[in-house]
Length: 240
Image (cartoon, rainbow, N blue to C red):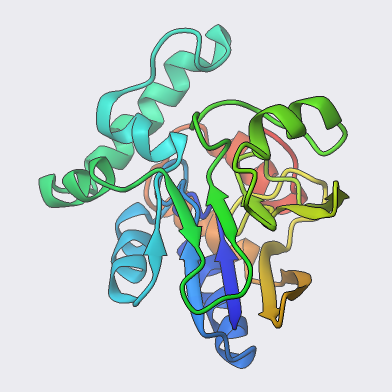
């Protein structure tokens, strides 16, 4: 089975469409979205409509939770709280009650095993948190928080916007990177394809170009708050 894992679209419909075109070319059997669908991008509603139109598995990320219930103090740097609340208000004006109910009721993890001879455990940040940050070089934290399900063969997550693959204890841990907002200095959209067959799996981190100038123009046309910061993120693939 060939599975595409997409995470952290962040309202960037242009990047999502480019990735989905690539996914179609790759002839995948299943698509899984690992959260952070709408918030901080210029087209939250269009992204949500695209995701919901697909026959895909979808789970919740921290940014989806923020849209539903707000951003709590301590969840972001204090210096960012005001502007991020302005961005949230802007996004909420473009979503309706049904959209928010959909985000609210999303599950928080996926276990893929039916039709496979391997077990894949997928989630946004960790199996027990939408917010915890686990980086590629933090071996002990990966062991403690990512590899919680002992019977899994492959662990897949998003959240940190930095794609990587690590082999540990005879298993693989993969971060998909971000479709709509990479932070690793490589601004092309990032997603994962996993080929799983006969107890083996092959992992491909794919980078897909898209029209970043168009995305920044949509931000501007929509009167998005924090446009200078978000423009730098889109153009250069850096953290805001």
